[in-house]
Image 1: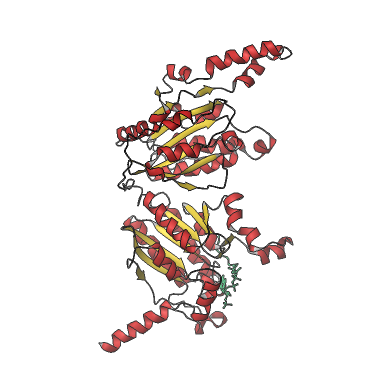
Image 2: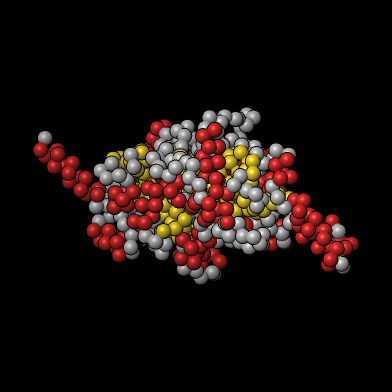
Length: 510
Ligand code: HXC
């Protein structure tokens, strides 16, 4: 028995060394942790249970028969984050650059299947070069199986990807089908084909950072939902994120203890809106002052900053926040903002997370740039997403709600459950100046006359009461009581149940 136990220890120790000391040192020198070090930080102490530590590839081509490493470039298993089960897949860059063989794929598939069967999230830590080139189609087949499971799990269990090294091919396509992607600045890259291939094919010379670094994907492409300075920060933030997320589409939202009273009033909100309707203010101030303990996990913070999205809690229970940001482009809805918010709304709806929407929107952004870029279709995504969502939806109009954007931003007409407006709300087809100039074009030459028309329109529509008179607004509320109203509303809506008509799936304008 003693020898068998010793054999086990030797085998375990060998597997834990991955690609060996030299490659582990190289990983550390690049500022990256190893797969196992990462899991230790991500998961609760001593909670990690590893699977398939001794799995090796079965490839004999290109001299591979002599280069077997137990574990084969990926560490898989399960553990807990603050006591809740998660399944994990951590690519080991020290073994064949974390590339995926058939055997490596089977390890991933096992965990994906277990996660779906047992209804718990999957977190993937990616640091890998895609399909293992020596294995050819066997590796491609392996990726196909992984992709299939990504899709099957979509909307059933949360899937989170953290990009922690150079990632290409299947190691970007699998993350692309998960719910959220986070990156590490300066050490992680995502591209379908790397700089060398780009140079050969298009003669373009770009660095890995320019092609697919965190700044590109969090500001230009919107592929990544956030970026952190190093591995440690990224993993700690993933622990924080997981505390907001349900474990599955049937589990309901997690509930954490809070010391923040549900009926806390904040009188500073009464002066948040500037007297001048064209002056901006920071919508994040409102979010921080309303949610539990000011704790807001923002997603896509640096992309389409004219809309703010993220997770928070009200009375300890997770909500999704969607808010126009008057500080950026006056909070206008453009293609990027619409796409960003639409995907978030659909995530919340998949996982029964109630949505709280703060509205201050002057409309959709006009211009050829937007129209040629498909604003109609992208704007429709947000309209579609809010409309189909069956989770509790509470909307607060703080100032402007103009035109089509009024309808889109979770209005009563598309099944907003509770629609509130602050006394400063202006709900109209457009701003008073624009309206008067269209309606009274013949009077444009007479500034006095046109100003009178503007004043008339302003007096009639620059308030919440025309909408409230029709029941489109349930109540005009004092800003200071916003938290209390939302908390009470969410309590009242706790058992909300509506269903859309049966369909195979909808046909959202993609
Ligand atoms: C086998 C690989 C590999 C791969 C890297 N390695 N990628 N081995 N298959 N796909 C090995 C390298 O040979 C090297 O081994 C070690 O990993 C580290 O790689 P380096 O190149 O030295 O590291 P770095 O300079 O940091 O560059 C990392 C990289 C680059 C950007 C990931 O290696 C790269 O471009 N790899 C190829 C990417 C790719 O084209 N993959 C196939 C995609 S197709 P040694 O022994 O020297 O240390 C795909 C299909 C999926 O994935 C379908 C999608 C729809």
